[in-house]
Length: 135
Image 1 (cartoon, helix red, strand yellow):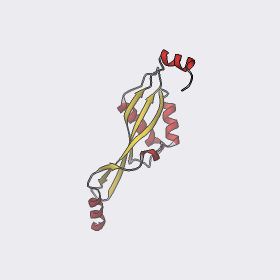
Image 2 (cartoon, helix red, strand yellow):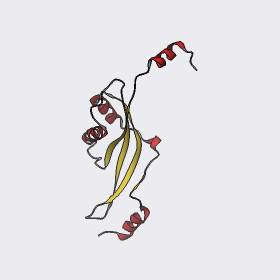
Image 3 (cartoon, one colour):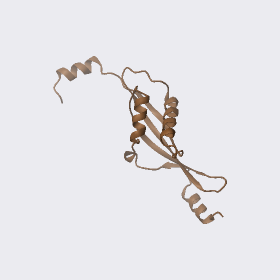
Image 4 (cartoon, helix red, strand yellow):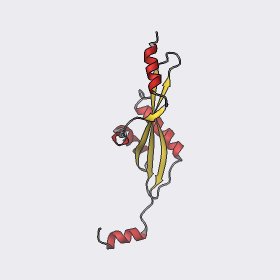
């Protein structure tokens, strides 16, 4: 039997299905996932969580609320390296790796929202590093 008082509380609290969940500075990529991604994609210099979104959906059979999380990632590509694909490619691959490592966390998804191609330093920057005193 469904407890309708519990259900109406949940419905009345969440008028907006998407909302910020945590302070982004608290969030870190799990160490094991970070290591696997860095080994599988040697062109990636670094990746981090830019923000997280939570979506509340309801199980149609029981009307129980289910909270799902989407972590938006920022990916930096090493200088002079060619990316293997676009943002959607990396999103899919990171999701596959995450599901393989953490099969019980199917309520968590990743999406690459920013890819930065790190450019190598220019000759002017290299010259300045060598011959100008540090400021």
